[in-house]
Length: 349
View (tube, rainbow, N blue to C red):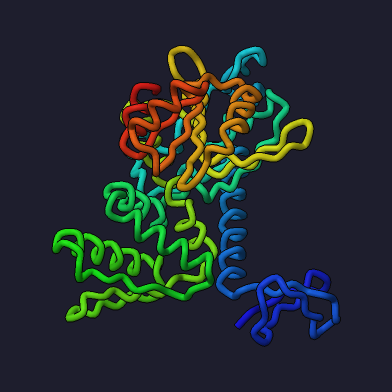
């Protein structure tokens, strides 16, 4: 059942079925309160709880660091000159020991700090959700599975997006006219996604060769299928390249930035990499649908951030190699698809 929490008296209660976002008087104090889906409310509550835990741990680490850097402490290191720019701090554990597909070590304020400072020097406020780079869940694994065989899974993705947009609860996937190899790959993917709770229900009618899928109503899952999967895929690919090159870095996903004139923008994936030439920003915009009308916006944003064209990347899942090459020749931006992303990052880092 839907749930609400009164912002005035703190009372929490279930209510009769209502549209999420509707207002209802609190049964304790009658103050108007917003109705939420129970799963959504629980997700947000858990996010705040774990974010608070991370902040507490960060404060503990900060206290220790302050004690070590205090000149009055015996053996303390001498403070560096304020004229020296701080380099991005490496992840909390050594890169060669970092399991990119199962770590929360990047989801910390310390890991994001160099990027935050980079924006600050440009008078830009950056707002981070540290959970966006926490790979202890299954979103990154699911994204990699989709990217590894995107030609086959693209139609399924589009049908899922269509079902969400039209408020359908599920869809049927008919495999009678699909090759045995492709049918096996599709059923394996659907079973895997079901086991990872990306589908609410999975059922395969073997005689008819029909897969019945019930969609998950959780907001984060819907966002994943509506384009978030590409952000996860790009993030993991970027991290793998950084790990291979053993680079110190600061990375983020879904960064909300506010410019001095209060313009708002969201950056899909970004990293600040420590290289021999200094700090190298890498900006990646992720597009699973039409994006051509936004090219002028990206050109202005690239100029505004002062990022060279080779480091300002548009990764579009539907682009062919020929289209990507043509767009690179036409605009001061770098265009890649799923097949050319890794090579471009490898050459850049």
